[in-house]
Image (cartoon, rainbow, N blue to C red; front, side):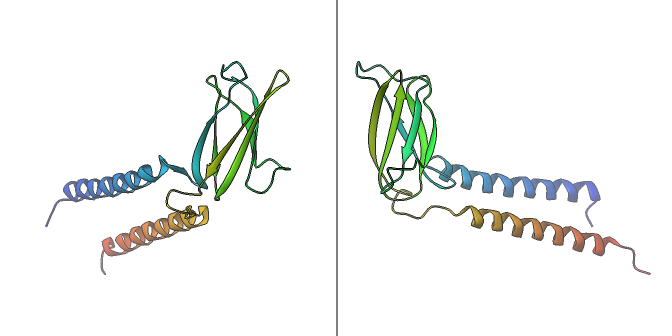
Length: 148
């Protein structure tokens, strides 16, 4: 029979390996997409070609040019990032010092189609994993009780 410290080290090592595998799987998909769709980068510049740093940006979803899907400000290089959760032409519009810059981008929800990961699926998966961990802990506690 193994001693308690060796068993605990082995269990910790197995748990660490499983956690690293799970993180590696999520990191591979997070580079190309956000949780709600593909991450899109646009660069907005003024007429003279200089980036519009700190400009107010409004992004319009395909088929809806009246209400912005998201808003924000460009970074110091005139770049703005948003998530395209459906296919179609997305329009970004930046305004700075009375000057307006527009760019249209053909967006796909996720590379290869419109198969974005549902946030509810991710939350459900985490709840299932938590339930498995709790059940495992309860079973371990019961098996360690001294028998009368």
